[in-house]
Image (tube, rainbow, N blue to C red):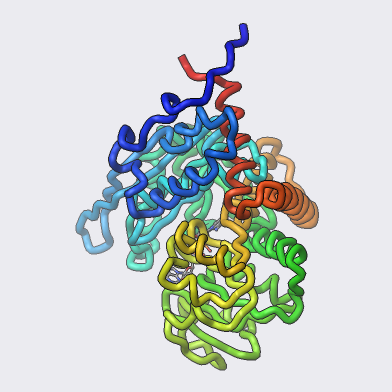
Length: 439
Ligand code: NAD
């Protein structure tokens, strides 16, 4: 029997003060930024707004102790997290980060952005994320493996191919995914390739996954440039973060005729007016661990990076990099968010006032999870596609999703971020409403 629609009113939106303190907007970390982004979309959700509180509360938060034997005979304890923000549209999906600054606020925000992102490109997943507060560069390979395996075992009670599927993020890679897949499989007694994505191709990974996020950044960036009449050929690009996402994006923009004039990573900032040789810089980073000391480029102060003369700025490192402090100095016409959460809401407003187009993370970096979805589907069917097919499907999904978001932004006169949230949150909450509440 269908129920009469419930009128939208204050009583259906719990006041923020009823949220536990770690969920509140004055939480200054990334979670607070996410809540502000949600508040901007609620007025556009119509009757679905009565379900909006669901977006402000992660479904499940797991904090785990990860003890391991260190090579020197001592025992070290690390704090690990897995947060499942929302699983209305399907199993949780999102990466695992190993970084010394990982916090619960960060993992909660990253899990929520995964919910939005997965809905924005319409892959059948909810949102999740994990992490360990550790500087993995200080661990030996053996310590890294033991930590990864113990963490996987601890979160094993909530992950699985139909429950929650981790993937790589900052400082995690194909090898880490192989260890996670093996640990989960050992614990469950059968090989379960679909429990993680971003695996090595020989272990059920997908061709094209390693480059998928950067390829998605390039694809939607090119579409956005077309809309504002900016040519990629000859464009000046600045990239923060030269890892999986930033390195690939710089290479693809370079292939299309743009030049990367400035790069910043955790080792420093470099500048080269003629454009860096991206392939040579990738080799330098692989050899030395960072961009500092790259032959032919000038060293640049980290703070000066934000004011560099460029057309396209690609933050592809960490959250909260573009802030009220530096947004006024950005010269780019377009910011394409390869990283998750690189721009604070205050910086978003400053950039909008200055007519700088921000292509938000929740669509710009969705290429990774899109090919992770392909990987998961291939694992289930044990039938693997060739790389051309994967790239073609990726470009089609990203281009169509971006076109829909662009249209919503024009119609409702909102930013691309709010437009993406409108599209995604409508999908999430519509599913929530149809499923109803249990019991
Ligand atoms: P990565 O580990 O391959 O690279 C991270 C890069 O960030 C490195 O170049 C590192 O030097 C740089 N960095 C770290 N700390 C920094 C600092 N304080 N200042 C400047 N640079 C710093 O990680 P990645 O996979 O390329 O992820 C980068 C971003 O993209 C993250 O925000 C991640 O969540 C996001 N992302 C990644 C994927 C993926 O598929 N890997 C998908 C979607 C979003």
